[in-house]
Length: 545
Image 1 (cartoon, one colour):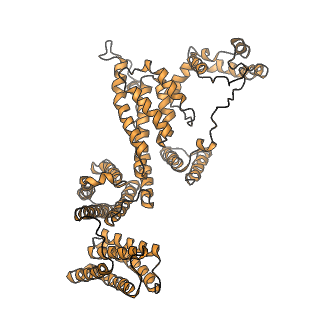
Image 2 (tube, helix red, strand yellow):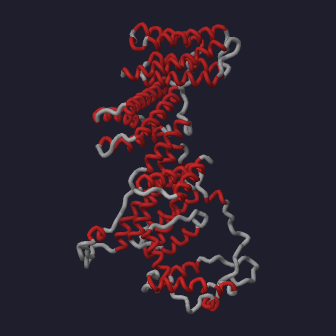
Image 3 (tube, rainbow, N blue to C red):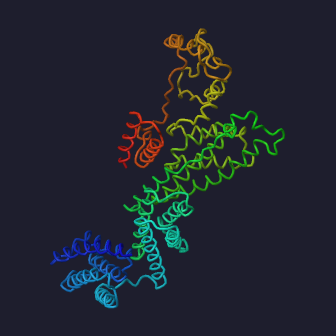
């Protein structure tokens, strides 16, 4: 506590000197509103964290006087200026005697508060019960903020941290907290970041301390607003700083990596064998795996469409992206490539909480939750949903999906799907849009090796087959100069996508830069020039919004 009082004395003395200068210069007109209010708010916040209630109450009374002067409810005359000067002078005396605080200091602060209330009384609009509830919540938020800041500056024993989190979790018992964003989000984020510390699974890293520090600022700011009869700000500088800290910590969380168990037993042949009579079918196991995840995604999508403050959006961004990736991995494990492709394609839009993408995900999750949901019955539905994501930025598929798609392409399945999805001719056009089989055969020389059969059915060419393919491949493309597979299709109703929609900007660019930074930290080799160039470009794009 001694260190906290030292810090308070230095900080509060600076704020009081600012107030003294502003009041001294305000002879015929009021002090500058913004600097005056900012210094008073800072003084009250510092006193609240240091638990010097007398100075906190005096600063709060002076804030009320300043607000009434600014709103024109109180004239800045000789009496008002004299009361303000006396309050600043007493604040200096109280700060110097904070270490020896006693009844004399309490009486001095109370007398000065009464004098201010005589000319700037408290508003009587709020009921006694609501004022009591607001004061309790503001005090609880201030105590939680002070405990977090004290721990951040000097992390103590696990028992000490348990006491700190007790003050934070006490806010959960206040019913009004749920209706006061972003306080509820801050408490949830602090609780999630604290659990690994309480279990001894990690240490108080710089990222976790940053989250706790910024959370304390938001709690203190929100408590101050509630004390003054208002609502916590949704997108203040403190909230934005907390959002960035939460995003940075979330980007470092280890993702779940699912590996086939057989890959862990490569040196033990036939260690893993399929059961001859499994108790459940593949379709049943698929439903058991995805139904609950789909319902969870639908709830997140619903919340994402209603989120307003930055802290809530940041949390939902992480949770929606995690839910989408989890469903994509589940679909991959069952070979449901169209389902996996949809979730992979929608991931970026989902992380940005884009309404169109959230709508597609809601329909996809609703279809997975249906009673007849099975991988082999959903291809057509998810192909239609995929077409509605045409304007989304494509992303690279994971190796497992790429392998499945390559296999389907070599067997001709992807060609059939591509033919079904070709755009229809523009109205009134006489050109033939779909290539005839003859044209297709003409454009493919007989001397060119078949890619799908170069290394065996369904495998890419390699070795001598690959060299033969490269030797004739360029020359084999010559007939395409004379025979076109199809005329270009440009309809009047085709959507034009602005280039800005295909670029990372603002928070998306920052999140992508954090991901690249984490990859570089984990890599053992020196990053190449292209990776560094991409990182620098993302940092510049992050400043766009």
